[in-house]
Image 1 (tube, rainbow, N blue to C red):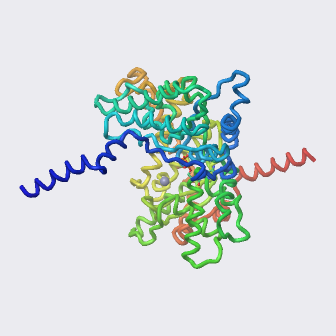
Image 2: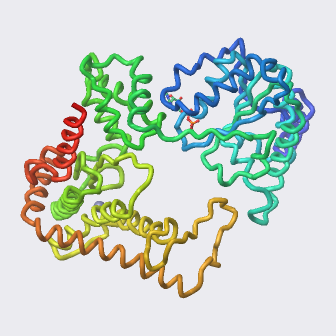
Image 3: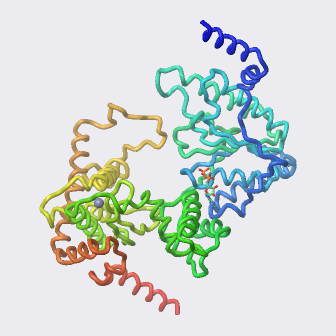
Length: 502
Ligand code: ADP
Ligand code: ZN
């Protein structure tokens, strides 16, 4: 009883007292982090590397905030919102901050998931409060990260009541954006990596009517991002940023920032005076595959299987014109994988079927090598098979690249139709699709086997180097196979074009 009384006291006391009261009343207040004159946003466009197109588009927003009269004088309406769309870590938040920094405007930042919490009705009042604060400080910028947390298409998913709260929040956001006139001078920027799931109402004129795409950086942009993040580091004099950007295909800006920091830590751990190339390479490896696990227990038998598997990938991709050229192969276990091959993918905008097929053949080269050498296959090819199956399915059902199924696609860019159990094609077509997918894969597997059987001695030689050194580079491949015939061809055509110019 005493304990029960104690808790009753505490609860009622807390509820009536200042502490509890404050808590209750603050529920409807927005949790936006405010950066304004006192907590100055120091980020400017100089901090954002690459992203030329996106920077140009947001430059206009900076202009709107700085001299709204210039635009409204002619009767134009200033846009109220822009949506930054792109994968995580590509610099969307950074860009929004830079807009605030350039316009010297206060910046309210919060995440979509902050709106939606367990108390019903909180989301809507937080939105109201946020807009009220932003208007008081106008010109200002509101930045909503992960807007998909509130902005998913309404009335589409599940039966539980939990969506009501999200819908109320979304409705309030739409109301606020419609409510403020274009002279309010508050611009809402929102970020998402899934523009396709957003409610179409958000994209209507007068709301987020601009979409700015922020993509993963290409090789040249990666170099610029490296330069930004290398500035604060004490680096070796001969550090080659071209090389670093070549080694990091598919990395986002955030990954690159991470590489730079990790490299500095690795160098410090080894008591170096400056950060060197090798530190960056180690940092890249670490970020790609988790920490090296040199002491992971692996039987010699397994190691041999992994070596031949990886050598198989390397050999096949060396022999095929369109497969991505290899940079490095290792059989040092990292993270969950036992071996890995790094390629240098070309950055292509359109992909031809022969390129897809060559890549699939190279991906099947691992299993094919196991078959050719040991006449046994293993579970080690799981991720290769996953990749190949997805690619074959996409060829047939998305890109319309299969002769038998034809020039059609079952892809739906609106994302509004999720087919679940009902497929948009007949049973007959389903069978045809399955057959095509399996035929494509089988054909590439046989092609890989034939290639490897023809080059069996070289495959063995390569696997032996791999077993000895645990890692091989392009140079090793060149000593075993000679120069790639296609590279020779490319070089000579380059020379030809040069001659023509002269
Ligand atoms: P997003 O909001 O797209 O997930 P962020 O803007 O939060 O990504 O990026 C995270 C970090 O990555 C930034 O703080 C910055 O250090 C780095 N970064 C990302 N993109 C770039 C870029 N284009 N230029 C320079 N740094 C970048
Ligand atoms: Zn493999």
